[in-house]
Amino acid sequence: MDDIVKQAMVKWPSVPHCYGWLGLDARGNWFMRDEQAQASGSFRDGGAQAKGSLLKHDKLIEFIARNYEADGQGRWYFQNGPQRVYVELELTPWVWRLSSDFFVRAHTGRVAMLHACWLDEQGRVYLDTDIGFGLVHTMDVSIAAEAVLQGLWVPLDTLSLTMPERFGYVCSPDLERSNQATAP
Figure: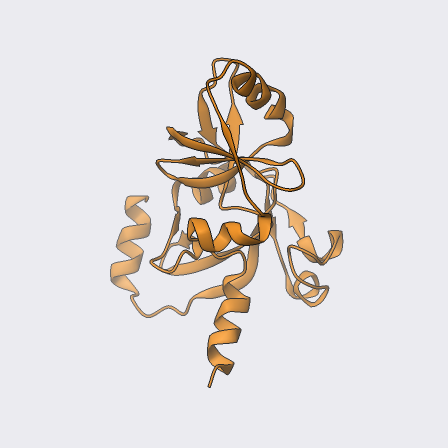
């Protein structure tokens, strides 16, 4: 986390958390979700309008990447100065990019060490790593297939609906917050 962010958190410790305004898609792209995008539906299932605006500013994307982490409940967020901005996930908190020598790097640039390879009912490839669980980027599935063919990775079967609970992450922190508020 950036030092300036840590300093802001100390200076303003009571800034309310932000929900619904930032999304991460299955290709590792960040989306800003204004009120209109949020009103169009969920980030996961609401279609293109619900995703919002693709972030293209390199410095902002780098800042988000450096300050991206999870809380103790598996909700991923971007620490924006004193404000925690929870992230809506299309599928997983990490999107993996692979090199031809099977080196694993996250959409944020962080290097990861592979623990296990998973395959869901739709044929999507996932990796469980030392920094967490994520989807292999669609452009790198052929590299993952080569690792399997060489016997380096042995994919385990999983159902996509069970992954958040199994791997300890929350796709929609805003929905979970709403459900907790209405629970008896």
